[in-house]
Image 1 (cartoon, rainbow, N blue to C red):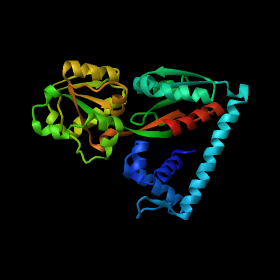
Image 2 (tube, rainbow, N blue to C red):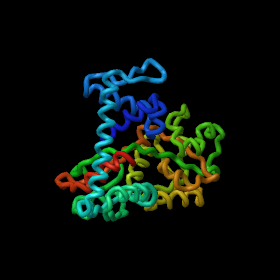
Image 3 (cartoon, rainbow, N blue to C red):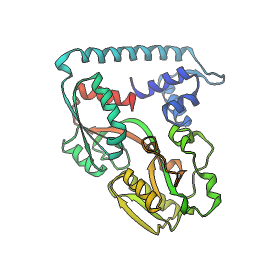
Image 4 (spheres, rainbow, N blue to C red):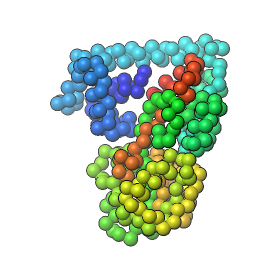
Length: 312
């Protein structure tokens, strides 16, 4: 089942765009846009939006009925392939950044292997090196963001991710900034994406020390765009190769650092830091699974792509 169909199923189950958006970790405007595009594709409206809870139109009910049938067929296919013995044997090599390799991919791979017994190898590199590995065939898939990935690859959307700024409290010398600070529980739950909390104006952080991921990592390029937009001139920059290491270094050395909001789901938020929302146009990025354009995907690889679409 594709991602769009899954989204519409969740809206139907929750009977609310806002509740579905929270469950799917996507903004409500983005979810509404996705649904409208699907409605235009079929030439019919799926939901009556003027009532609470929202209800399905006749066309929407037929869409949901078909989606559930496809879901049942897909689950039956997984079981059939799993029970077919040798057809499930195969190897997939995945390349990704340290954050995904350490935090998000292990549980996904473990669950997938229970459905489809196979051998999955992971390679951890920065984005530029991963692009080389993808094109020379060292890896089958690259999982990462779309900032600098080679256009020689095909890509399939998995989900959006969001970047926030982590700032040592000792660098905050203006009480006005405290109203911008995000509660850590809201970051972990994703609720901050739907709150009225404004993004921080980075002019307050001019001439302060930063720690950034080194060139070749996608967050490096995002940081440069922020510096350019807000005319930020850091007093000093130290470059590191991994986000988690740079975060701990920033805490101990009192520096500002950009981190994935999802990082705080896997490590304890620090009481020494304050966390700030960044302008959406700069902080929101798509996570994709990439593969070489001319690569022929085996049934096992196709099953892995489908699993990632539904569970990432």
